[in-house]
Amino acid sequence: MNITGRLTRDAQIRITTQEKQVVNFSVATNDSYRNKQGERIEQTTYFDCSYWITPKVAKLLTKGTLVELSGRVSTRAWLGNDGEARAGLNFHTSQIKLHGTSKRTETVQATTTTQAKKVTAQPTVNDLPF
Image (cartoon, rainbow, N blue to C red; front, side, top):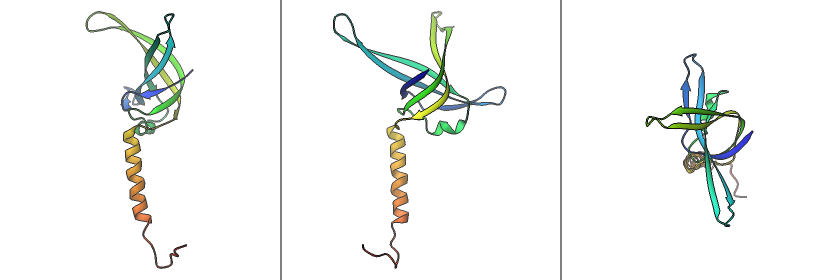
């Protein structure tokens, strides 16, 4: 199954009791449709995601980043602190494609690029103006 959505928070790396690293993050997907009265209905679905292959990807998974995920969905149920039954969707991610970056990542990349240009833009004696 594939889902495309935006990260709702920065990814976190957790370590299991068996010393395995897992990247946890949350993705929101949006859908809309028109009901019988012609009103547009917006629907947002939240997925708690896990990625077990490499923890290095966590640096790229920042809040607001648009991602396309491949994997499988599972459900979970629990009782909340108020005693009410709750349910959620888990997405066990096997592939991640980045389609966009959050504004924070873009700012970091722009700053890094500007600094790199400053370092390489110093003319040498042999530089020709054409």
